[in-house]
Length: 79
Image 1 (cartoon, rainbow, N blue to C red):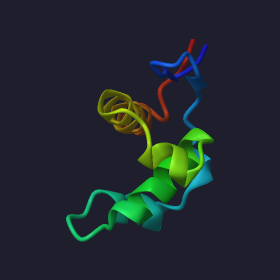
Image 2 (cartoon, rainbow, N blue to C red; image 1 turned 45 degrees about the vertical axis):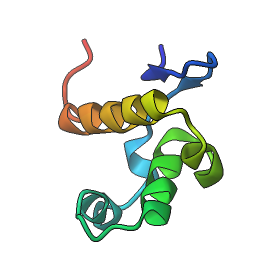
Image 3 (cartoon, rainbow, N blue to C red; image 1 turned 135 degrees about the vertical axis):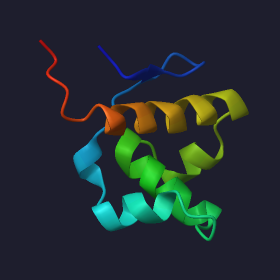
């Protein structure tokens, strides 16, 4: 089961080990550039930074929310 399905049908699995804690902290700072944000979201989703930048608005918002939700529940027991 995927973490997110994009409007075009692509299924995305969020990988929390694909980026560093430093990147995570920087992701949520106001100073973070859109380019660096796209890189972290790309790492987490398996998309390229260009694909992230070209997502429709709602897909982008769903991707960011899926990452945040998975990070919040990262240690939850799936059983």
